[in-house]
Length: 114
Image (cartoon, rainbow, N blue to C red; front, side):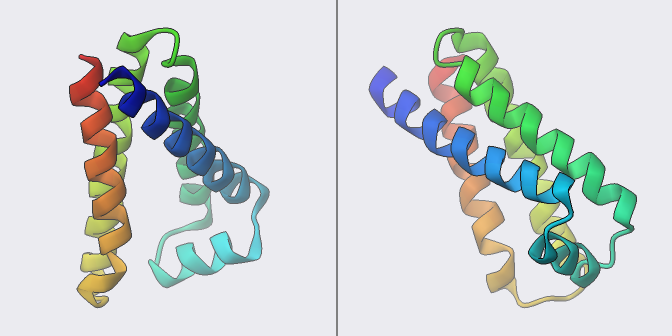
C-alpha cells in the first residue's frame, strides 16, 4: 500500500505545484477560471498558497507519512470546496467532476497514511 500512496502523492504533488504556481503567477487560464467562478482576484492568491501547501505536504509526506495524511485531508477539503464553487454558479455537474475525483484521490492518500 505504501507504493500506491507514494505514486498518488507524487501525482498530487506535481499537479498542485503546477496549479499553485499558475494561480500565484496570474496565468491567463487561472484568471479566467476565477472570473468564471465569480471569485475576487485576492482569492486566487490564497488558493495558490493553499495548493502549494498541499503539494509540499504530498512531496515531503513521502518521508513523513503523517504529513502526507494531513496533506491528503487538506487537499480533500480544498477539492470539496472547489466542487461546491462550481455548483454554486449553477455550472453543469461535469465541471465539478475533476475536483470531486481529485478530492477522492486525496482522501485515499489520507486513509493510506493515517
